[in-house]
Length: 156
Image 1 (spheres, rainbow, N blue to C red):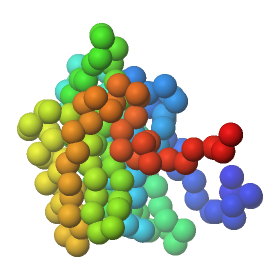
Image 2 (image 1 turned 180 degrees about the vertical axis):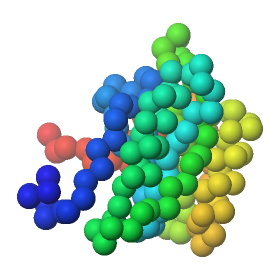
Image 3 (image 1 turned 90 degrees about the vertical axis):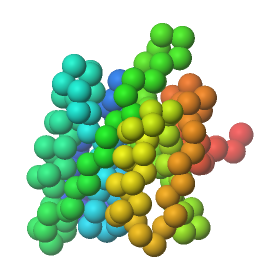
C-alpha cells in the first residue's frame, strides 16, 4: 500500500464488530470527520463481545500519526448496545454515518441514552453541520447502515 499509493504511514485496524460480515469494515469502526480528527466507537460494557475488539482498535488509533508525524484527535463515541434480528447480532454502530450537504446523517437504534450521547458528541465536534439522527433498526437487518447504503452499485 505504501509503495502503490505513496503513503508513509498506514494504520491497520484489527477485528470488526460483532455481526459484521466483512471481518472489519472500517465504516463500522473509525471514520475521519476532518483531516485531523477520527471518530471511533467504544464499547463500555466489558462483558460485551465488542469491548476488547474496539479497545484494541482504539489503542491502534491512538498510536497513529499523520504524514508529518503529528497525532490525530481521536473522538470516542459509544456503541448502541446489542441490536438483534431473529437472534442474529447485527453490526450496529453510530460510526456508519454519512456527510451530505452541510449535514451528517447518523444511524440510531432506539437506545435513547447512547443514541443521544453519540449525536451530541458528533454535533459538538461538527458545529457547522446539522447532525441528523436516522432510525436504522430495520436498515441494519441488511448488515449495514447509512454509509453502506450510499455506496456505489456496479453496472451489470
